[in-house]
Length: 80
Image (cartoon, rainbow, N blue to C red; front, side, top):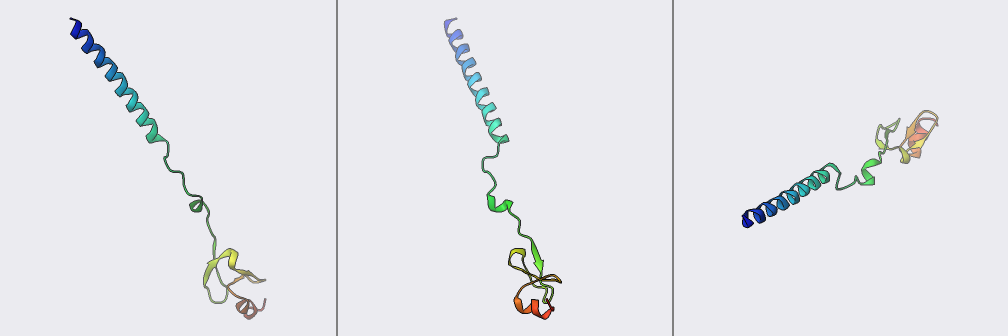
């Protein structure tokens, strides 16, 4: 009888330990392990030159009266 009681106690402790471990593993799966890099969150707008239609980032384009241009020469050709 004594061995049956010890075996039952060991079984209950093992069962509690295992169920706690599984619940911790389940909570870890729900939270993201790696945050998104900041570089993926930034979006660069791409625009086309009004003369040659080359695509370039908006921050590199030259702004004129009639649109955006890739260079000063194209800006002059358009009459801006």
